Amino acid sequence: MYSMISYWLKYYRHECGLTQQQVADRLKIERSTYTYYETGKTKPDINTLIKIAKVFDISYTQLLKGVEDEMEAAVADIHSGPADDDSMKYRTHATTKYEVELLFLVRNLSPKQRREVANLAKKLVAETESNR
View (cartoon, rainbow, N blue to C red):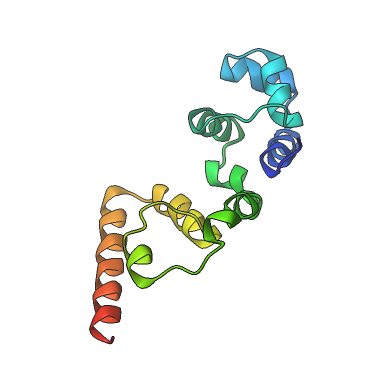
């Protein structure tokens, strides 16, 4: 099944002027394995995505643009019923497209920047709870 990741792999490979064989050689994988990534027969794991992004000299998050929309349909059934405040308060997995996008953005920050984001988020949550 063709996916957004497949689309971006092909797009950035063409932008770099590389063949599938050249990308596969740089990744030290078989050309057929890389071809499967581009055609959507298989999906690369996150470590492979990071390596591919380095080959293309881009951030791995650029290979994930649009993926949250694909994921949204897959997780829609999780949110089929109304959630009460307590279930939302203790939810620890990213399920909405906004949470997924935020997670990808935070993963690209330095450790210091991550702490700053976490502190800001804690401050905002505390303010929200105090206004209830």
